[in-house]
Length: 360
Image (cartoon, rainbow, N blue to C red; front, side, top):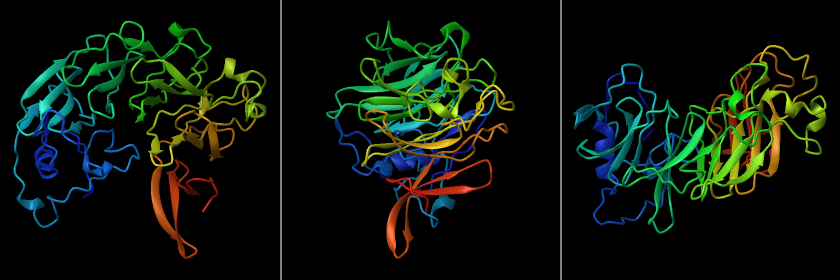
């Protein structure tokens, strides 16, 4: 069944989700229930799963019975505007954004509050948050950014984990070669969790003094920076010659503010990048400007570039790649091949062999 998100202004309507939690056998019968082997049989990641499929394989709700659904419960979020947040469901718990920027854990079968974690300092990643658990399920964390800082909560209690980063958070503005107080990098999308890493893009704003759009991975337990991929290459890195000398020190953007996708079996991260900044003027950044407006395939464990394709060279039209890369299997020349498809603002759909990057 294809899950579709709807915008609600005052409450979360969870009729379907309440039924899905029951039908998937995910309601907790013990303290440590087993997780479904099928990644599409749960909704514990932004957009449903790390591959950004926005798809549920559960089958209790069908075209034959969807018309008979009734509201099981509602929960008022207190948000007077459009509700853009993607709730997560893990076992019998639903995590939502409510009560003026608080993360709230609800009983997914009844809508009863289990805990609330207030975020008084500012807006968090408004489109969603990340969930991580250890292999034995003894550790469970929620990870999200707030006011340019990455922080972790205990998913069972809602308490902030003070051992994460420095006093419970990581300043995402640090380590970018700019004065941290002069830049903003927090994206509305929450990034991706892969194994024991949380991988983040950024929203660098759209001015001449924007931050560079580095893609970075942090350890989910400690908050330690594990790897960085420079989307504006440094001296000696591939693509450096497509910019003016030392452009990474002054030019910003080429960031990944949209959804990323992961081929978990192969350990490949697919990153759609945005335009270099300033969006509509390019005389200070002569050249093709790799890796702006590109699809990047990176080793999710190390950040090493596997392949790339640049859709727009030297962008001065703000032609960001703004959608999640889709991981599909198609028939080509009489055989099935795994592909990644990227839709662009130019109106083209770009299709590549998922492993080699060869255009299909």
